[in-house]
Image (cartoon, rainbow, N blue to C red; front, side):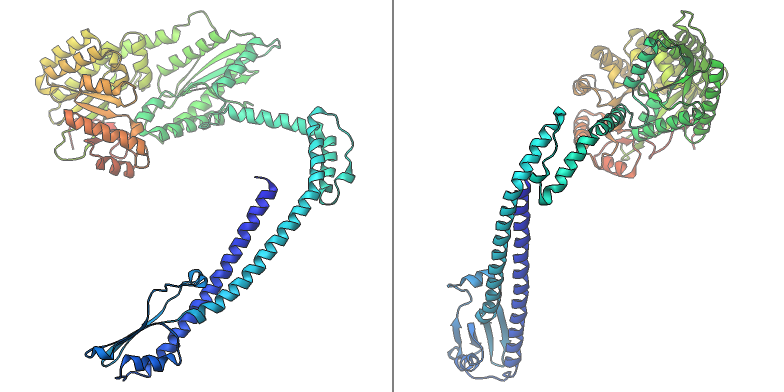
Length: 633
């Protein structure tokens, strides 16, 4: 909308509001006069409290002082004394009556009758209407005068504005001519001065524009959670190192936040973001004296930084300080392992793929050493699988040594008729007793084909725990990998060992990730069927993330589904999640499947989910995971 139309609209609104204000004042004054008229009539009629004559005589007497729109006197015993004049409705209402709404009614009781009147409003309305009419006339005249004046001024300015526009259109061509200030007179003179100044300062402005563009580009490639640069900036920087003709050297440090997936699943994504932000803060503090001013988040859980002009021996000081900060942070949260670091040297024309492989190997070795450890690889000897091989040895060793311990987290039933269970979380440790990152252990076991042996160890350890401690009552959930559950050899082994522990197997609920089970619906159905044969149950974790959830839900029919924690997060405010959960609960009840909501972290989430009739609740608001005791409290 142009200035001219905007001004007209604003002016119209202002004068409209002014007219409304005048009307409001006159209306209030009219109401006040009406109240005075009723008050005067009331005082007058109160002097006639003992009236005992007919209604017509009363009307004659009162009409000498007052004008009535409606008059009705009703005698209690003698209808001949009744009298009525006028009507309540104005059939011939005038224009001012439509503008101003007022009713001057009054009711009076006498010893032998009742009087109801409505005074005429003409005298009250007329004065206000005349005043309103005068004010409206003056206001409209003022509006028209201002509009005409504005139109004349706009016509004068248009010619100057047109010239200024033509001049501005030629600025990108850099073909400047002197500004004809005579054509930009009066209030347009500052425009001429500004145009002349812009010609002189264009070069400076273009330079500032490029600087601002660089800042915007940097913001576009910045991770919002940590403030670090993104993977694309990291790749660009790696390319400059590999293609640089200038001699340079230094170290590349990779930091892996291995507990991110566990924290997201157990605590929620807000806790996961806080976890990443705290690690980023530790990295910044450790690098404060290195001169590094750019850090990178190269994946969801991996960070990187380059430290130039130092050797790996000098760079180790950064790793030592970083470990100290990570250990300090670990004392404030549940996981004692926060992140692991790897460092490798680089120089000009380094092979980027080999450099990243070596750095990843260093991190993998650090992860097998204990919480928040670091490892340095100074040379690339061609043994790219060193890190993976180290993991293979570590996992084989912990399987043989049964290097795990259990934590438990209860599930809160939403009504007394629901039989729920406690979920067991396996935590692994190396031969030095240091905890290993759970997500990395599981991922590496699947990579090396050791997941079946790992899951067998978990199952055997669970059976031994429950058999050796009869005071541990109730049911327990055991996590196993989907890749194991889909293998016939593992399922046969599991069926056989559970068959020999019928009483204990009836207390077990095997929890399997939905996305892995969807890879083979037939094998998933077979796994559920075999577990039912030996009395065990099956729960599907992180339900609702896959596109084929409903087909899988219908065909496999597990005993329990555990909704992904993303559906609990803020569900009290999220109508889409409410709709999904209601639908799942309704379908589950029809086919006898229990629904458990996970990741419950707030009271509002708990109350909302309870109203939606889920069968159980799990999350940090309900209970935190704790080391399993040998006896129940």
